[in-house]
Length: 535
Ligand code: C2O
Image (cartoon, rainbow, N blue to C red; front, side, top):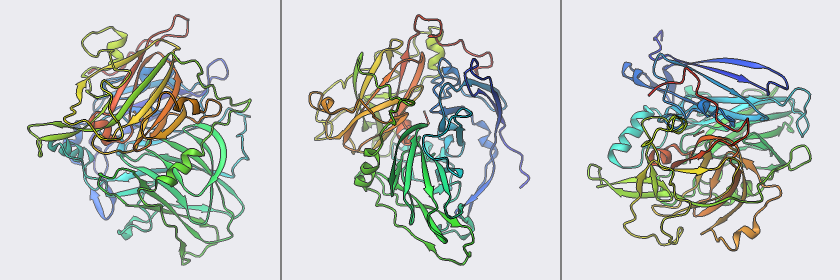
């Protein structure tokens, strides 16, 4: 269209792939974030001049950022946003991590389209713990709105109501061959019979957990959130926003076209039903284009048993080479309720607004970055009195207390360097029970237990898996249930934790941990880079 890009924000990423002492390899990437027109679902989304106001910041989802919180990216948590025309160098080292991760904008709802894959290969000469696939492919799952996503959420914030759902789900940018718009086309994965393909699945959707399956083929799961798992075969993968999953696809048919389907999973009776399925095809070489595609039926939206069957199968390798270092002695035993609620709001449509909270705190974003306030000891930006347990106890998944109003606050939970944490995330049915994919920045954690109903502190810990629990950075709290995670606070800084359903984050389902410096030489947060954006 010959349109000039309306904003030009240049981001530079300098990543050294291995610790300098081992092998110094510095990679520089230049990210030029621009606005462009795009046509999907037979409708073109034009970008107008007033969009020039967007600020941006980029998060490297799953990258540990040891001592380099300044490069983590969430706006107003670890940095002020990069303003139009400004640049910022995200300078960090990938320490001991490999696998599929991803990057995305971490401000407002910009991550809807501003995102991409991070593929970290194993060190040279180190093989995968499974037969080497013939080919590797990134498969990005997402959502598409015909309208401007920022307008969607601004409208909802004003009215106090839930925002509109997206108009389509997409696979590698396309709604797929079953879209009602013939010009959409769809992503096609070409395969040769007898070969193995590793699909690096990333769920970049804003608000939907997704089922993923391929007609006529089973998938072997080998990695989640850039950590190897004990391989297992399954029909349907569950992947929540924020999560990544590597699966092996053996092209064990001779010929034909097979449908790939990504469809939403949500176990929340009181939420708008969104059943749209994104599709793509696996295309065997030599197959005539006139050949009919073998179809598959996606699981129903509330297919909890399909979801549970997948999550129950995940185990860490816990081999000699890849041990699972689950913290056994616990310094902080925390219980956080996560859920939705209703607060009064005189200017809202119904006189009330939907809110979300953790332990009854609806998190309020500060106006200067928390990490900055922490490093320079600036008072009045946050308090470190985040409740380690629910302030009032009630039957979290049963009858709810009436007139339960959440409290606004920018409250953090403080951890000493290297202390160990057990955190039980308990869903509540305050407004409706619902799954919540909770993401913790700066750490990987182990999921040691999960269950339905209320967590029982006497009985449930006895059943914890402390041997080979799955290790990841984003965990699905089951609807009307709980999950227990453990991690070691070995990364000084301020680390965001939030629901990766963007609408829940907007409503306040977020908080942050502040991890103090240790006493050792390599145990403190590095000073801020000179080009760190100012608020
Ligand atoms: Cu993938 Cu806080 O984000």
